[in-house]
Length: 433
Ligand code: ACO
Picture (cartoon, rainbow, N blue to C red):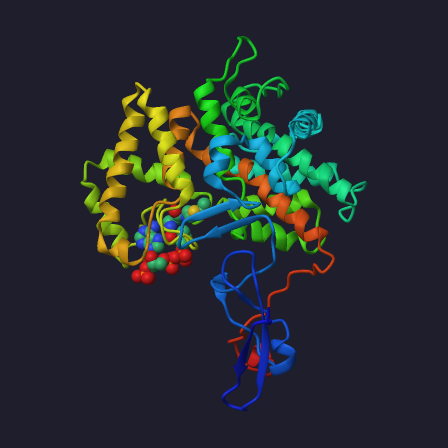
């Protein structure tokens, strides 16, 4: 097969350069612009990375036009139906599905790492009781770097694997404790005989004075939600983890930076914002159309939270799966409040999808639109929603970091810029200004 190239001609000088086209396994071919600056003296300009591949990766593939999401080639729908979160973690990190024996060993290994250093517990008491749990997560995960630094060699695959195991295992403990601290409740230690999702529910809701059995329906739904959020190629938080990791920073610190990025309402913070929006709609007594009109008004900063996506220009495949779980869970729910949230979400979706503004801009519900409704039904407080997202996404962050660190060609991430500031000028002494 002949190698494809594109030719870029500088109209002002007539100079030209042939650029190689890199062929992907799937997705758009990618122009290799690396020689461009040396050959023609130009940078490329792409704020927000709309047309830029920041790296080559073998982990996750998504097609925003067709609504496709695959981890290591496996469609998300098949993983959602047949896999478990820990099996998906194995798949994402190691690149293949484990055998039964490998999965057992992996689960055992994770179970051995679920506890955190006792000294780390004291970090929590330094936070205000009303601190946002994402702020606590960021601080505590960042603090792990103080416990695991000196003896870790990030260039050694075995050491990197231990970091991955530690992060997957400790994240639910750290997450649940951020909630327990805010509530003034005693920290519950992890229990190895429970599944990953069950153990998280246990650390969130159990009480040392009474036995607690996690609701199997909620544990199953949570496990599924964790699978759906496990990775999403080069999104803002993953790119942050890669960029900070590219300076050979401590991986726990790099993941803390990812948590910071995920927190924003334009990214992982949207699931919390969706419920606030649905509650506001329900409490306001105003028709849903009023909010849809506000979302369309360019003079109003209000947007339909949980709608729109940088890559998906069709229904987010994860939203489709979560929408179904919502029904499965709430059908057996007696609490009218949860049902009312779901009803409002569905009506809002219907109105928006039939509105030309949303149709013309290809704005569809994203993963966050329905996940919050399930979390509310589980009794998860609003400010913990993004924490659950961070817990799920940790495997994606650390797999992407490991992929970058394993690549001998990896270099520190160092974007350039289009400078549009003042040209050179002379300093004016303060007395003359
Ligand atoms: N409500 C109303 N209008 C919207 C919305 C929305 N939720 N999303 C996009 N638009 C409009 C924009 O105003 C813009 O209109 P214009 O062309 O007339 O100027 C057009 O649709 C394109 O939107 P952009 O902002 O350019 O899209 P971008 O790719 O930069 O942003 C984003 C994507 C941040 C997700 C955006 O759709 C948004 O803010 N959505 C709401 C927040 C949300 O749900 N975030 C979660 C994303 S999924 C995740 O991170 C897990």
